[in-house]
Image (tube, rainbow, N blue to C red; front, side, top):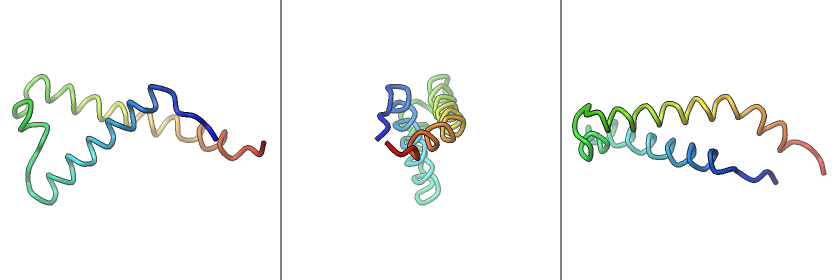
Amino acid sequence: MNKMNPIDWLAMILIIVGGLNWGLVGIFDFDLVAAIFGDMSALARVVYALVGIAAAYSIISLPAKSKSSNRVS
């Protein structure tokens, strides 16, 4: 089994945070990131940017990870 490195873990955590936040927005019209850091404050924008970067990193690294996990030992 392929172990995740610390960057993979961080990306996964950020994607989960983003997904949960979008779920709250969609279901309850409540933006948790904005509630914690302020509506489009500099810190909230950093969080949104990090979630987007984590998603892009995961999309780019997914093909390499799927190829390495399909190898037969």
